[in-house]
Image 1 (cartoon, one colour):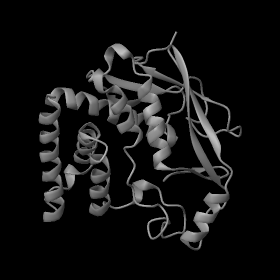
Image 2: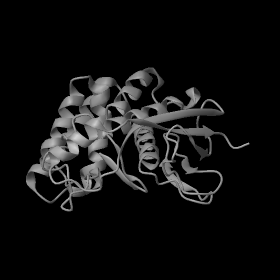
Image 3: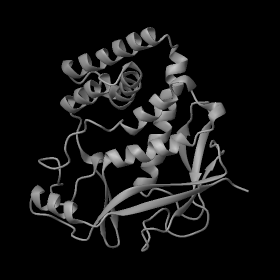
Image 4: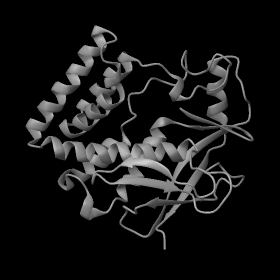
Length: 258
């Protein structure tokens, strides 16, 4: 889960919901600049599903040692989970398999050399990428551009869901898009950067610079489960609290700078 501390307790967003938000953001990318446009629908599907196959948040990985909901950033690498993610992507076709394999390499290549099993998994990803590119008749540049969009949308979605928009109109780097351009995000105006407001339906204004989207303005959202209880004795208690929590939809209103 994506877990953020708020004045009222915790804001909890499931990773699959964050992935759907990433796909919503990518869907607004300008049509003239879409990478591998003939596979556009498959690209959006891959982005929307890039967190499928994750370990269930409940169980031994659901709580921190202090009893708080555990954010995904505190969870250690799981080879079993990474293998499952790759396998699930494979069943939908080579395009999603390729993009997911590139994502896994990007996430875990830094672990190379720690143990033989992880190295074998990383070698398998390289072989998968080569085989998929060959079968789909794609160049490395084309495949990388499509993955760059996935990574860009993933990063922007995480900035929003983790409430990382800076204060006082300062801009934050999103990263490089599929066109090689570096993009930045900021919140116009002053105040708490992206924090969930008392009104869950109030959209947070957002600007991206330079503007990569087709329209001049659009709104996206994600479902949030707020929790007022700060700690839980066991995972089952957290599971019950999330099951019964009211669901709010947080929105962000993107607009092009005038």
